[in-house]
Length: 96
Image (cartoon, rainbow, N blue to C red):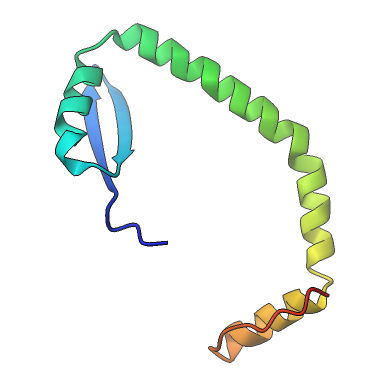
């Protein structure tokens, strides 16, 4: 994926840092000022609520995710990925 169209900026106010990534740089300044001048406490507490939801979702799948990742390490595709990396060539995956 080509990320050259994306921009990340920081808007700081009252010690809070807001990072934005937009694919329309011409709108970036207006959006950051609107948020920085907006209801900071409402934005802050909304962010806290959303982060709690995201952390809970991550915790639901973490154990299974780690177990499945460990199984992946025992596959031929993983061994091929390591060999390809060491040999500085594209991997040829077989699905095994």
